[in-house]
Length: 532
Image (cartoon, rainbow, N blue to C red; front, side, top):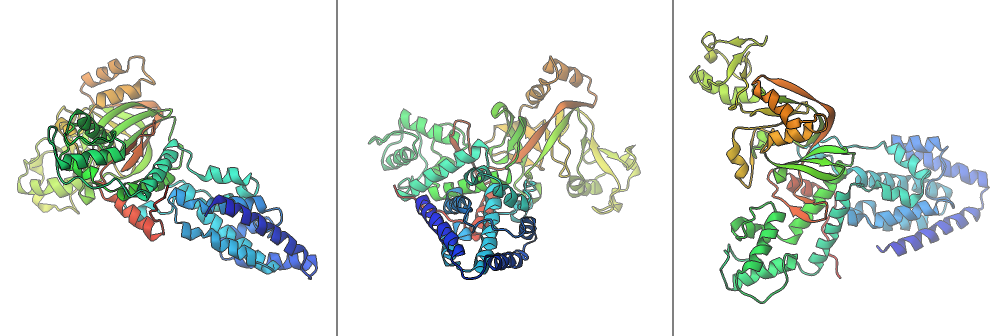
């Protein structure tokens, strides 16, 4: 619905309400009493709404003669809910306006005032902190959503400039605005019929023919090169393929292999779904991230240090395996220390599922690990009858002492959490050369852990490298506290932007975004095509 029609109707409805209130035959006091009784009765079904109206002695918020600006701002916002990837039918401004026009009596206006508050609260929370409850969609999304108190929405609206209030509901991080622009661009792409025919198969530089023309045309439609009638896979086309590969997390070799072609042939509808999901995720993440923070995007296999909105350090990462019980969770916490020359205390799940069966068959198996009792003492393997134990009653734990071959490498970065997730070094360096890097038991392995440590220590040490290396050379397990703890955010984005606004897409390796979009669709979120 155009904002102008909303605005015009809101004003005319407000005027009608004001005139109607003065033209009723009943005494003014009786009208007020009837209105307030209706408000109290209808608000009683929602504790927060009831609390707000009690605090105002059941006064009007939307349907009084001085509520026009507030009403207009709400109706305009609801009419634009599609722009945010919200379920427009859930708020139905047309139905509200019809009810406004039909509300003739004080009781009808009182009931309607409460109904509008219900719609407002639903919209305000959906826009600010998301439609879905993350953990209900996927149990590994354990992010704490920063929900606001519902009564505060009503209280703050009542004392705010309405338009400014609704603008402030929108997540303020620049990422949200950039995603929204990309959403609108893709909707126009859909309105124009998409990116044209798909590319029939893999191609290499030097190839020619109609398949190359299809590749060239599709990349041109996506904005990676200009249009051309050439049928050869030349240097210009190779460069365009490389740019596309960089934006999609693929090896940027300029060869349109099977993986690259699959990404190129992904329809705009699927990209639009990724954008809508990313916007919902931004709403879940609508909080202060920290002037300095660590951002780990699981789908991008990277870990970054961000200072005042600028990436100041970046390294490749390995994340949890795609097996259901090894996937890395999504959450935020605070890194407060690192451990140089760490021991690896093997998680009990790994001990009992992977190592105990080996020890039952051969007590000398996994000889690099120490057997430790409940008091922290190393126990001789010869003194343990492993065949007596199972996953439930095994009384020991396993530990790998500090060494270059330690599973955690030579340093780990701790943000203590109940999921036992941290960032660490690894001796398995060869995995970082792979395009897809999901191999761990859930923790995040870093390709450049020493440099990561130097960057963190630079805030508190005049010679961070020298300090780190002096601790490393001792070979002893050493804890180093961060003077200024750093927020850590493990996120999952199949669509994200750079600071300059360039859009990037990644594979949905855990299938989480697919589940999120399906859940959004069940709530009424729909794709739309925009003409012109």
